[in-house]
Image (cartoon, rainbow, N blue to C red):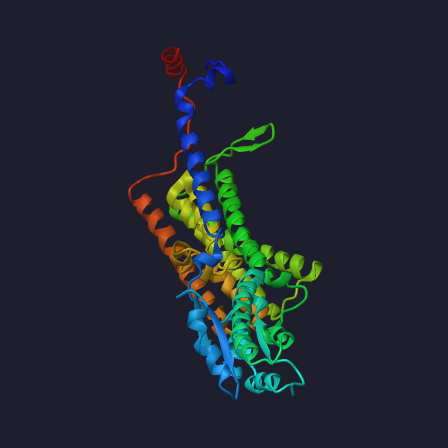
Amino acid sequence: MASATPRRAGELVRRPGLWPVPTVLCALVTMVLALLYMGGILSPGDAMRRLPIAVVDEDRGALGKEITGSLGAATPRGRVQWRLVDAATAQDQLSSGKVYGALVVPADFTASVQALATRRATAPPTLTVLTNPGFGSLGSSLAAQLNQGVAHQASLNIGKRLAAAAPDPTAKVLLSDPVTVVTRVGHPIGRHSGLGLTAFYYTLLLVLSGFIGGNLIHTGVDTALGYTDSEIGPWHSRHPTVPINRTQTLVLKMVMTAGIALLTTTLLMVATIAILGMDAAHLPLLWIFSYCATVAVGLGVQAINAAFGGVGQLVSMFVFIALALPSSGATVPLEAVPGFYRFLGAFEPMRQLTGGVRAILYFDARGDAGLGRAWAMIAIGFTAALLFGFGMTHYYDRRGLARYTPQPAPPAETAEARAAES
């Protein structure tokens, strides 16, 4: 058999047919990624919708009701969901991740303001802003800024009335902004919790572990069975093709995904908790959750690769990474991103897993803090991967769409092709 004449890059680069597909794909992927990632973070304040914040009015006088009654006018319509609750309920909602912060009007607030007017005050009137760092630095900061703004405006309104009745200019200045705003942590988390960001990064590691592991297993199995060439540096080889249909290949890849995830999940926890010292309670539960999350992502990757073939890795990258990151609600609250991302957050896997990890790490593994929803969505994702993956491979096998091994063209055919190209 005559060997084909090696071609040079300078000759092939002038072929018009080589350029369109990679050019269009690179341009589209870059454009979509830029719009997805930057579009979700540019203006969280403007995009904010119904950010939940608790309000506690313990005041025995009238000023507390005046402050709580003016909350609707204090912020643009629809941006904040003010929840008027008692102190115990507010603390429970902080501890279960249901509110991003709280504003507390103390029992003696009206009395302390009235004491200023009579010059019998022993301490300035105080409003307390409670933060919830378990939601991450940005989410907690947004709520704190809103609460501080409301408290400051209330102080100015009260100061106007006090200053109007003040006997001298000095008193007017002193009473113009009389309320002290105290900010403190409403639900503390550990010192080694990355200011509430360890939940996001740990979840990202779970997703990447399942995504990368699934693709490595997919490629490794295809190489070992002879359906893909093995090329490591200058060494190229191809194993003998093993006769196996698509469904059985998917079974093999999914079993390996579940088995290898045992090792990767354990090593992930060893690295982040034992070596780096990340604050993490409920370790057995965290391990089980991490394993199930990694397997669910890995099975999803195998199903997509089985269905879409060569472009499956690109599709799974969008499903598990590109669309998932900006809609996870882990760094920017879902209540502070455009509606498109809130829609994605209803089903994108990273959003569900973040809620579960956050509940385990920061909110005492409470089901109502997001862990219950996370378990349900893992089960749905697991089932969807099996149904979609095996549904597609069974369809391909019934249609007789076998996976063929490319064979070299006969010498005569190769010569004809070279003549046609020249």
